[in-house]
Image 1 (cartoon, rainbow, N blue to C red):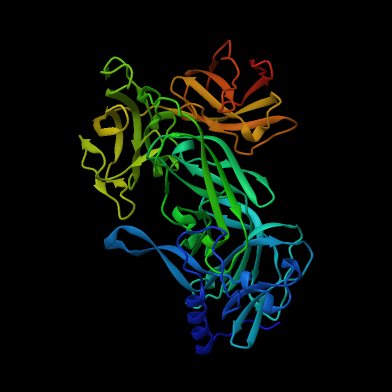
Image 2 (image 1 turned 120 degrees about the vertical axis):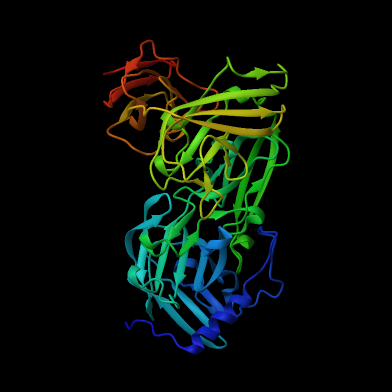
Amino acid sequence: MKKLCFYASVLATMALSFSSCNDNKGGGSDVIDPTNQVSDGMYVIGDAVGVTDMKDAADLLMAAGVNEKLMDVEKKSWTDAHRAGMYEKYLYLEANKDFTLTLLDGEKTTNFGGNLERADLTFDAGSAEGYWCALMEDKSMQVPETGFYHVVLDLDLDKGLEAAGGAQIIVAPVSWGISGDCNGWGMTVGEKEGNTWTWNDVEFHAGQTFKFKDEHGWKIWLDGETQQISAHTNLGANLQNGGDNITVEEGGLYKIVLTYKMAKGDIAASYSYIMERTGDAAELNPADFVVGISGSMQGWSTPEGTSLAKYNADESNVADAKTKAGVYVYNITGLTFPENSTFKFRMDGDWLGFGAVEIVGVNATEAESDQNFTGVVGTYNIKITIEWDGAARKSYKAEFTEGEAVEMVKGMVYVLNETGIEAANLNIYGYGGSELFGGWPGKAYDGTTIKDNYIGFEYEAVKDAEYRFIINDGNGWQTSDMADGIIVTGQEIYLNASAETTLTIIK
């Protein structure tokens, strides 16, 4: 099969296909093309999707691809833009059956495909297995497993992908989760049944936000380490691909249901969701908030170890016992900022950047993008003072003073899971020298295993400090505290968690 050669006529066709895409802003499966006619553009077609005749392929029209890239350094913001020659589609593919990506230009069709093979796709959060091929004309493809996929085609019209193989097709398995203030911007994968994903008893407070996100990350990088060309793998407001956060107006517990129904064009047209309020949210208590710093020096993870601020009850002043209004103080000890560090402050899932925090003691400046802080070098103790009005933050102040580095060690905690609860639903929480794994309920199981029912959690702890652990499901079930503490030196720790809510040391 010959490699692609692109001419001005193809570029003109690209422009036509972009204009044909549905520009619906409301999202959902109720958006229907009343004529249901095919129009010029790129389609997924073949036995793998159950449609082989172009006249029946209206709903298989792909969306114009959206790339997130830094458009203008002076604007200090990331900007989404349609990328010429890039197309996307979410859909089911049947195993071992042919499909192609077919360009319709008037009455002329051109089929694209390639030698689709398993590959480690590059997401912003790491790699995940999917399928990749260099693009070829008149070549069909197959996937070896029936499933729900995100198909991305990039014709590489600007030659930006030459170092990554040029024009290409990516076929990535999809599992929808939610990420937001409800889980500290971690990941909660939905329970899938047919074309729906469901989350029960998700807790939000008024004004908090979230997005639907593929469990593998926020985006797929098409150009590998260059990281300038990507396809979004998240749905935001109005279910727009890579859209703004979805805001929850009323606090409470919610049942969330995301539904997929294949529709033409814009990705939002294929999705709808409902949020059913099922109960009241727990009262907010700032003393229990996860407060601290996330930044480049610790991989932008949830605050833990030296980046986690410990609540200081002696210096705090809770003025109203019912609403918890008052002034709250938290302390970070011995946090080191290497040169060129960038960071944000954290509070109960919120990310607070330049302009949202009063800085005292250092000359912090604004980084080139995303309102990150930079310009801080050295080791510091940081006193964080938050004024809380009973429902929201009124102010956030961070006072830096010179400090001495605290020696940290990394290791693994391995837990024998005899709880009867699926490992994917378990978290680990640690406390002692500092909180491990962030605030309650701690760190979710990340898929690391050793053997049988053991599940693994990586820790970063203050060296030679004593810690205790609790295993929990984040929804009311938890083991008792360990009877004995463990002096942490970076060693592997083996625990046994049982259905009787006990947690014991194995070794």
